[in-house]
Length: 407
Image 1 (cartoon, rainbow, N blue to C red):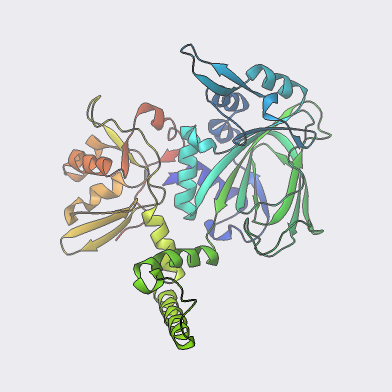
Image 2: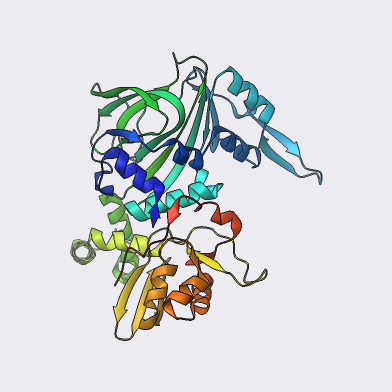
């Protein structure tokens, strides 16, 4: 999947791929105003907020470094049929924006096709799950106080400017659920300055940071953070713990009242099986299984009610994997294995490339019954119909390309 945001981030940071994620603090060049405006603008963010029922903590508002009570910007309303819902009060939000505040919307990819596709492109690139949050700050408002995140972050300044302070970590590889607390900021100042429109910054997990518009006067800042939640050894062991449920020995109660010999025998058997399992199911297998078993992203399914689909796109969270055997192709994605004839490979590469594929065009270039292949992929929820609303997430942002995991 060739996405302009991925190419822009690599160019801005001087990266040749995702291997630098989490390694060191990096600040780079610009993406360009046209790409920034295409991704998100302040008014588009506010329009997204206005049209949805939202509540804290997904929608939050800060002023003077403190989080405001949700009643300050969310109100209960009643629909014309008497249904009670909570919606952002745009009048109250407007006053807060006018006086200076920071508005935060988490998981923007859930609401906006452009950000949905951007996150999917970053996931295919990094092989990690990605979430995007948006931050709109007006006038001289502050954001969060000095803090650290339990995931790696790519910050993209889309409009305006904002001052940042970034420090090193005070605990090696801190986690959200950890053996000890991590509350003392590091004294190692890595960078202090202003991030301007289009600039990109990478902050690794555990690095302390804060941002503000204090001292900037009138104006605003809009930036998004793409969070990459990478897997750790703890996640691998958790996966192994689930795998041992297949062993009857691990499903039995731990012996508390047996003889010493009986308890030692059980302990030895459990330790032996656990060690053998860890040796036979390495972290690489866990990472591969995580990619292949992850369900596809939510998508509209019509079953052809409104006409046969003319275009499709792969909506799996990670690139499908192909295995070539004698006379067949196995496709692994979204927790499924689907087998096709080997001759279907040229069409499958286009349909599963991550870029929108026009069925008639793929059929013309491959000479295959692509409509039938597309219907199978849609039914298995690996591809989705490219409805006009979803198509907006790809327009001017992604180009055609082949699947990144060929047999």
